[in-house]
Length: 204
Image (cartoon, rainbow, N blue to C red; front, side):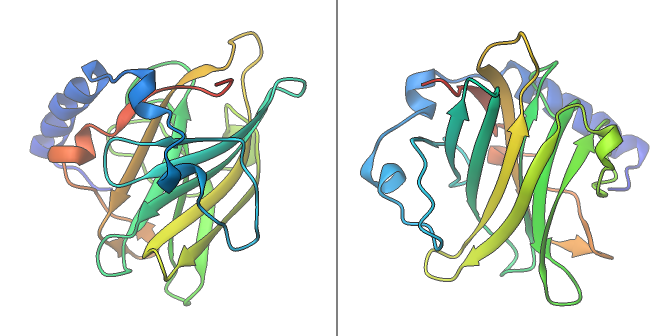
């Protein structure tokens, strides 16, 4: 994402707003029928799910305390008439965008649906695939699929959580309407796109 001086200033402002935004765990974590009864194409089963309060997104997950890992399935509408991107990630050291390790998915120019981990190390991240050595949280089983019925993208991943930090973390989710040169382009810097942050306790 290229950023001019003005854009960087704008992003700093909206990121500050997003970092201060919070919502109650009861709002985030839900067992509503639209969340808990969702059927995945491969019949995967998740013991918990959260209907996220922004961007029409949902997070399904299985937390394994013995291995300190969480397997997730993130669902979100794909903006831009199928030409956009979606992403979900954890921020192990902060509450906003910077410092988040995310998994992103979009339609590649070769026609395939790609998914990979990336690190949001600044307010203008490259959104390029991150090498395993550069990931603060080891991640595996990253993949994605489109649900034509629900008009959304599902991103799968298993994340190794940091030791000694419990099961509650700050997370970020996002969507953008375009991809340029097989790289996700900047998302809107207003409305729900700057409020799509919160905290989640994987043990609940």
